[in-house]
Image 1 (cartoon, protein in one colour):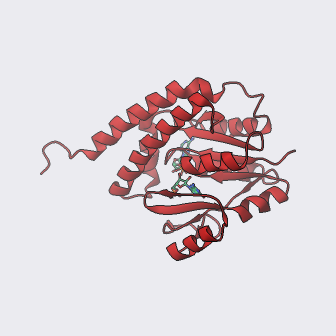
Image 2 (image 1 turned 90 degrees about the vertical axis):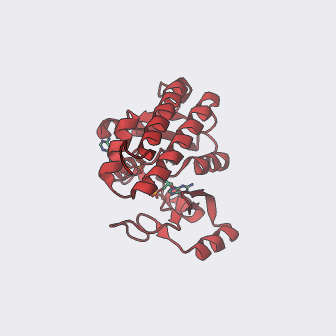
Image 3 (image 1 turned 135 degrees about the horizontal axis):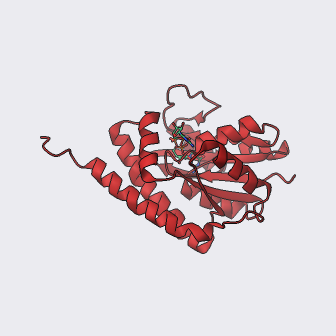
Length: 229
Ligand code: ADP
Ligand code: 5GP
């Protein structure tokens, strides 16, 4: 087995964290996780060194300057980055390294690890309605934060649609409807990225529709309810 860099990107609520967790639970000897660094505050239940390495802004900047990041990006006013040491640690153990990152970071990873060493998968829920429902049920963001994440999600899905047209970063799109099927699909893609049919380039229309519909939903959410003062 050749260890690969497996990039999972998705709009917020798309399911990349859940799918990454399942990959590691089902195949611990095959997949390892790159624990990212971030300046955002931990959510309830998130432990330092497990979910993320939680850093101060100064410490994050120091590590950027020291060249410790393979990639890093700003998301919703916070910094997030993949540490080279995390990726190298997992690859050296002979396992695929799973990166749960946003779209700008996915581009930087593709530049550092071309195909077939890296495989990049964009995950979307079956519809914007389902995405919103899952985000609501997750209850990790305030109304305002949710609005911001939805606006970013629209831009990320638009960027992914443009990207797959030109086959630059995302090699495959996985629709995360039933979790088990989505996880199996990701495993199938990582096992043999070239053999899996349904290339991402066929799916740009699906992504473009998704982005348009999600934008409408996001705008409706942002409008005050009729009759309210
Ligand atoms: P992301 O990391 O992309 O923001 P999460 O993995 O946190 O997304 O998923 C968002 C929410 O949706 C979580 O509460 C998660 O439990 C739920 N979820 C993820 N995948 C599925 C699925 N296939 N079916 C139902 N709920 C899901
Ligand atoms: P969250 O705050 O929901 O954990 O993550 C916000 C966004 O940052 C998600 O899209 C997540 O994938 C992304 N992210 C997490 N870690 C990294 C990282 O190391 N680099 C980049 N570029 N994005 C990351």
